[in-house]
Image 1 (cartoon, rainbow, N blue to C red):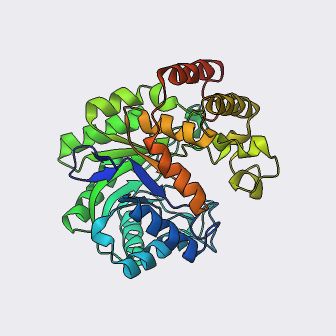
Image 2 (image 1 turned 60 degrees about the vertical axis):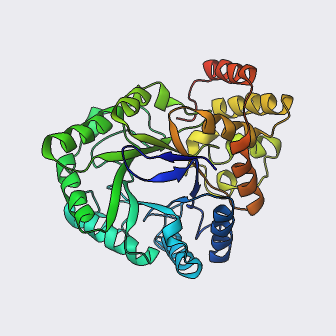
Length: 348
């Protein structure tokens, strides 16, 4: 499997990254180990997780995903063969089970988060440590308009970078990245790092799929190209919507049917359903499954460093990995853009 370098680092990762946020909720520990074993067999060396996982987040399950990965690392002895990424939760007063609901991206919280993740993951270091969402006011997780009335006191970016720099010197983390960030945020992280001799972000983990292409319409693609920041694309199947399974069978079991609609309403918007129908028809007209086409498109984008895939079954995982070998014809790419012009970012 093809490998790419992340940012300006020495981290060489596969174009496909195994996402794990179902481990501990939809997947048991045995399921998780089977997926990790299979991904490794297929040549995937990149695993992404977070202290908050699994999702939907809850006090009862928080940290289970990292614990399942940790037990697999101990059993498999594969630590030196993989690039391990995890994330620190940004502020969210509703998640009171994470450091009393007062977690933020300050020094004390980041240190506590790193130490807890290292313990759960049963490792001495994290290859890529990411900030799950910003400390400041910024529209994320389905909100797509900046609202200055929601301003709050955020932790200064230079303060966050300073503690991350200390943790790098201590050997607990190797490289850093951001997630759910904006063009301004990426530029500010780069500016503060260069002005003050602090560590430079290598990656940005943002939403990117056929129904959510804002990465390429907000100039984030240009910013990341010029600043050498690699995109880690998450939710490439829009929580399974782009597999067309919910369109084909409204009773299909998956994240969008077993959890309340309020959990991820953006993928249930009428325009998302209409766009999915058209993308699914296009895929089938060309001898592909909808999931295969959606993933192959994402894998092919020039600015995507690695695409984070998630699955609840080994059959789904196999299809998702196999799609990396699919090359979409020029005519299919053209028709994808025509559909996008009619349904522009309904899942953003």
